[in-house]
Image 1: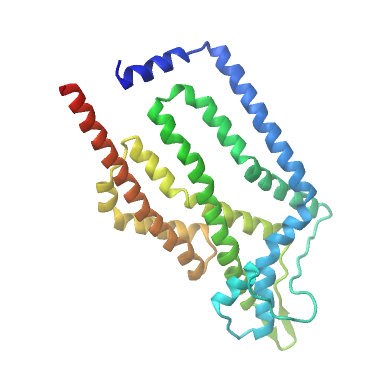
Image 2: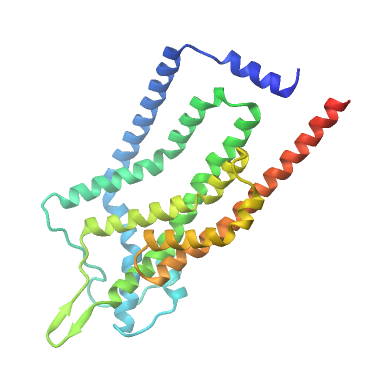
Length: 297
C-alpha cells in the first residue's frame, strides 16, 4: 500500500455523519468561548496595569520631548532603549503624559476593549489548537505535518510585528505627534489624547503590523497548495514592492517614518517568502523523484 493509499484509508476511517461533525464543532466552539471568557476576565482584572504598559512608549516620547524642547532632537536609539527600559528616561517635573476621557463610561468601555483584545491574544493557542483538531481528520498525513509549523510561526511573527510597534513605531509616532504642538503668542495647542483614541491607535497598529507580518505564512501556504511559485514571486518583486508601499501608506499614520518602518520589514519578509517557497519546491521535486524511483523499481 502506497502512502497516498494509507492517507486515503485514514481519512475514510475518520468519516462521520454530519450530526457528529456538528456536535464536535459545537464542543470545540464551547472550549474556545470558555478560553476567551477566562482571558477576558483575567485581562479586565489587570486592565489598569495593561493600559499603563501600553502608554509607556508615549511616556518615553514625552519625557525625551520635554527634556530637549519642542525644537530639539533625540537619538532614535535612545528613544527605543528608553521605551524598552534599558536606559533611564530623562527626569522632568510633573507628569509626562496626560490622557483624558470625555464620557462617563468611556474608561469602562476602553478597559473592556483592552480586555477583549488581550483575551484574543491569550486564547489564541487554544483557538488555533481547536481549529487544527477539527480539520486534521480531513487532511493527509503530510498536510497535517505541514500545518503544525504554521500554528507556531503565525503567533511568533505576530509577536515580532507587535514588538516592532511597541518598541519602535509607537515612540516615534508619539514623538512626531508631540513635535506638532503649537505654543506661542498666548496660544497653546497641546496634545491631550483621549484614552479610547490612544487605545484605538495602539490596537490598529498592532493588528496592522501583526497581520502584515503573516506574509511568509500566507505565501508559504500558497506555495504548498501549488497556487504560486518562487519564480513567479521573484519576477513580480517590483509589483510586490509597490503593493507593500501602498499597504504601508494605508495602515500607518501619515508620516514617512512610520511608512518606512512597515514597508522595509515587509520587503524583507517577501524575500524570505520567496526562499520558503523555493525550499518547498525543492522538497517536492525530491519527493517526486523518490516516488518515481520506487515506481520504476
